[in-house]
Amino acid sequence: MPVRSRTLGRKEMPLDGKGHTVSTSTIRSRTRTPARPEPSSTRGRRTALALATVGFAVNFWAWSLLSPLAPKYKDLLGLSSLSLSILVAVPVIVGSLGRIPLGVLTDRYGGRRMFAAVSLVCLVPVLFLAVAQSFPALLVGGFLLGLAGATFAIGVPFVSAWFPPERQGFALGIYGMGNIGTAVSGFFSPRLYSAWGARAPYLVVAAFLLAVALAFIVLGRDAPQGAPSGESFMSRFRSALRLRITRDLALLYAVTFGGFVAFGVYLPAYLKTAYHLTVTDAATRTAGFVVLATLARPIGGWLADRLDGARVLQIVLGVVALGAVTAAFTPVMPLLTVAMLSIGAALGIGNGVIFALVGQRGPAGRVGSMTGVIGTAGGLGGFLPPIVMGAIYEVTGSYAIGLMLLSDVALAALVFTAWRLGHSTS
Image (cartoon, rainbow, N blue to C red; front, side, top):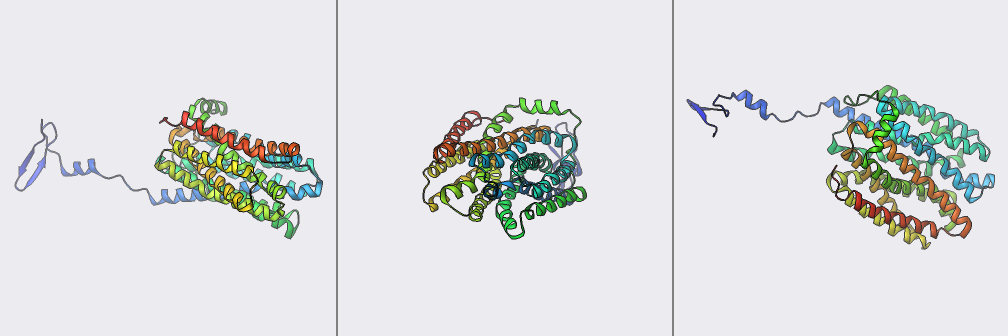
């Protein structure tokens, strides 16, 4: 029955479906626009995102200390290419496996406590490496240092809890720019080593880690709706692992982030060996690769917020495959630079897309646990390629086969993305 109105003088009072008069105040209350975010909430988001990004960058600098200094240790200790590959890969494998417990523990205890605690704990291996003078000692220090690389799994649930789903992709992309710690290490660590001695880069990083821990203790806050859960570690881990989206994104992240880590840790040695660059020049070019991949990450999150994330992933994986084939033929330096920067930008966008999909398709209470599983897969993806590349080079004297394998893996991941994610909506 149509809704009528009663005329009272010049004013018309609307009626509801039962013929009762509806007051103007009631109408306003029903049509009231959503309240704007509280200024304190907005400040909290910005502070949380800034703290997490800086904390992640500093911990990634610590995690990446050995890679740009590896050529110096190779000359100092007379290490083989395979030994050098193992040295730079050890922190990667530990940082990968450490993401599972850190992600689950963050769901339980909150990101503020976890970031402060891990930053303090990582002071120990950094200071130990400052005095290490043998290959076994470097391996032990690198093993313990791997924990710094696992801090990624702390920041994703910490940041995502502060932002609504439609803004999580971009926010997590900004947080992912903490990857720039690898570039900072590549640029500054060799220079600090050369200018102030072997202990200088480690002491500088130790000071930054202490500052991060104190900043989280004093300024850090967990999101109000992100109350820690008392659910057991194994329960959360199994629950995350049972999700199909967790397994699918873990496999893809092993390719995108694994490729980023692999190039970040092995590119200095590759450029020095294949193109006879100096250690500082090779480290600087690697830093450029890492910076571009890092800056591209929020673009990936932004694209995933607005477009089909699966389609974007397919495009970037195609770019990676083409760039790897080009690099396999050891082209002239300008062409290699274009190929490597294209790979870096594509991998960065792919990393941003994947964690935007975590926020969009994963259950809110499982983001930390999902991040631990997916982040572990990404780290493991970065562990194997440097060892494979070093072993292949030892046998063949060329990096071509290893780069061709990377191209094949990227193409396989492209097909997998179209099959598993192309039509998924949940």
